[in-house]
Length: 204
Image 1 (cartoon, one colour):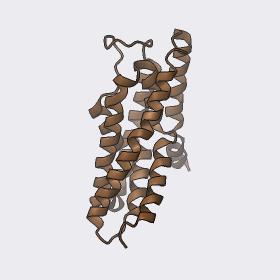
Image 2: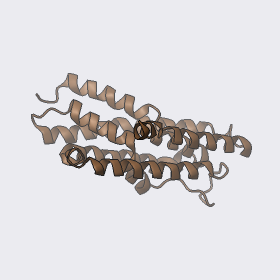
Image 3: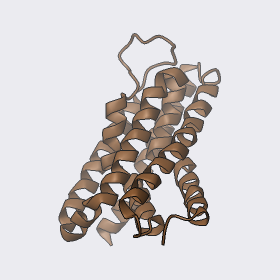
């Protein structure tokens, strides 16, 4: 079966829903939009999309099979991702006041940092494996993997941009340091809560 129009449209809907719904990436983009503005968050958005594109291609070309063969590697990756998420939550909680200046101690996540984060982001792995296992026909497989990854990236970038834009719109509301501090701690708490399924699985 080739990648038909119907299958591609179904996949596009899957990509939109998984890209625009809450998750670690979008929570961090919302916080970055508030603290640094839209323009300074662009490298973060591009890093997410490009890093995720590479992840989907890697899963499609056999990395997913490696984790099936060696499940311990996947477990280690998940816990490394959880530790990094806790670190990012701490950074968000201690972000500085809203400012358009690039000077200061707090800085937005870089392009490379955001791209690398996709490899330890549990939601990104679920999205990538779901895309490859569900929507990629075996006939013309390698070409289909590239098409799936490219379509996902084209949908992912505007989807995640919405969160950064919403954060930017909140900047004026959160000029007050007290409200900004509450917002940042709230975003940090949401990142920690996103680890709940991993913790539940660990203790079940």
